[in-house]
Image (cartoon, one colour):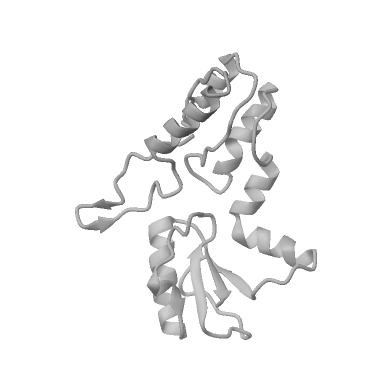
Length: 183
């Protein structure tokens, strides 16, 4: 798991840095539920120390609800570590987690498989040339985030000027490309 420690509202500023993380109450409830079936529970937070801790752990199964620390493959770290040390785990495998978190890659794969998905493109800098086929309105979101991180009422745009302003803001705040999708 990854534990929420940051309050969503700090100093009058909205912080979504840990929006995907679980509250202490959620972790406690899962712990109690698993124990109620007679199992022993050891809690491991998905931090930079986890590889060492997991390699030395004597566990039969990892109940994975971790989001990871950073990067486009962060949700794949715990499944990959479990696979490396031979511990079974719950949830999707590392490849699935990586693909699902990368919205651009996931949408390209869906399209290749014939699954309809709205038109989209990726913005790496706010001044880049926009596709000629662009139709408004569009919605903008960080390409490697989940839990609606980076999505606000300003995310739906109706013109190029606003698209560039919102894209620039998201690029600066999240330090990753932005998915622009037909709304």
